[in-house]
Image 1 (cartoon, rainbow over the protein chains, first blue to last red):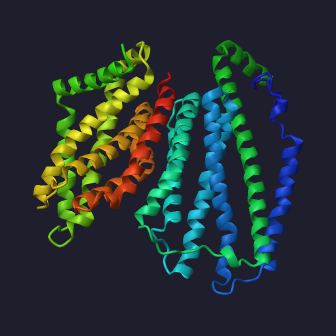
Image 2 (cartoon, helix red, strand yellow; image 1 turned 45 degrees about the horizontal axis):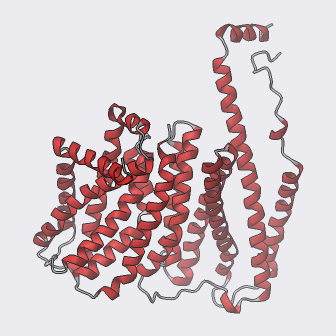
Length: 255
Length: 225
């Protein structure tokens, strides 16, 4: 007997994972070992930098995903403010979280690579500095959400921050570039013109895998957000139920 | 009432409140002055070249006191639910926003007007040789800071932790303003011609326009109850 539960305890159909999301997950599951094989077995070891160059197969795609997250967040924020539909905010929130996660990976893998190759953990280089500022803006975005009193407020404020942050990115990049002087020490990323074709293929495989992983996590995070909403509204329903009904249900469960 | 009239009315309201209570500007002055004094101890300006550090020190003082001004600007509206009156008043929300930007600019400019000459005395520097260029630089960058700051302050003062959240959101977003302000100020103080720092002036101006326009569109969403 489970009488104390909310009467309708069946999970709504739209909460079940659809078929295509299963396909996406399985594809990602296969793509991860495949691209690891490409990176560590197929692709040659870089001549000058050695093994440490391989970090770029993870570093650069993470940076792409961070930008994807931020861009998606901005577009969804605009859509939310225009339509006021909850689902756009759920996607914006998920995208911002993923943006922060991948941006964190960029900020950790970057210095690990820079120490042996450039000789320093950190420099004032434009990409590094503007990535750090980007990370700070979206950490602020998440903190602001946490400090809102309800979901509607969080969604509205976050949308404002998401749009301002995205508008700010090109200006931040330009200002940091000029700040270092108009002729900064050119520190080219690995690859560039003379990228080995096998390395190029491994890199492309990594970008595809990271994109799949991003989509997978996004779908799951949006689904989680909807379940959170569902739980919250069930809790509110339960709180509204008269006390006698709750007592009756409790009596029922103890036979 | 005309749109501009509403803007001036809102700014005038804040100015009148301030003139009557005098609670804001005095604390802003003392706070900003304190920052100058702290930096005066932290860096020995008889050894360190003022031209390389001075503009940064000045702008840290302006930006920190600007955050205080912004927090205050919306906290007074929250007290006794004055904001409710604004929200039901038949005025354009964006006019209210621009009025608040104007008020914040007035308070920050007041601090700057005292601090710049004071820094000249404190650090023994001829700060006021290129007054026109200096005023332009101060104005453009203060406007950019106030434009984004007012939008974020409207949001963060609705939370319980506005003192932390406002700088947390505003400082990263205002990075271009901070960089442009410090660079242009040091060029102006060094007496370099306008062409040297023209790109920074355009950057500040562009930032001002982009975020004033964005905030005018977004401000309505910041205040809905």
